Image (cartoon, rainbow, N blue to C red; front, side, top):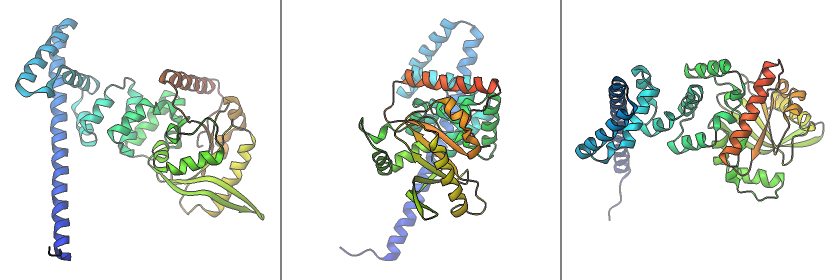
Length: 351
């Protein structure tokens, strides 16, 4: 068999890339056309149902139409698919918004989006999916693990949430409250019931890609056990990351027990050293994240950690039942908003 020359290899690579580009373009064109078709079908059926003003008629017409379309065009027009179309048109009744969505998301993404009832939460997921470019699988995991409720922004008043998400959608800078979460779900580490801080750190490094997915796609790993030398004494920072959009170093300290007040001074020392010796010109001050197995809100509030640019978050090595996690998150959100209403300041926010 004759050898392939360099020029032939180059030709093959160029032709292959042309074919792949064409396939991607065709897929985008098909997605745009189908998404618009689904919206138009949903809009038209909704108009018919509203015109009759009878709920039973709506169920009847969807079932009948599904049978007719399936006979003519195949199983892609089932009753379930028609209900997706109806929901799509109900949630996004304005064509200009739909035109923006179909350029950014596949129909599979949109089917996840349209069943998020809360408009603020829905917009949060749309914007985060857009900037982090989630696959459908990751998007679904984010919703199921209640990312919105775990993100710091959910503890803020609705007006603040809406403003920050709108800014993000208009191309503005992302804020730490849209980046940091509490708790972090680390069930993929498969840790046993008894483990040390070293075990936790080693498991994170071994599953670094999945850990970064949980942190957020803009995090870049820099170092493990970062050596910090101060006055002939050596310290070790567990993990050091850089967040591209925040333009900040992020120091992560891992604790297997509950949060302790002494952790604040330790993290303040790390952040001061990083700002002096590691931060580059034009970067924002480093941010500290203390991951621990538990904490009390009042403890965190009294230490006023936000003034030191420090955040504290729980981590879960096993994902609890959804109802348990949701109840806990709702209690945390309610506590935070009540404190804000009372004029308190318990946030771990970036000032």
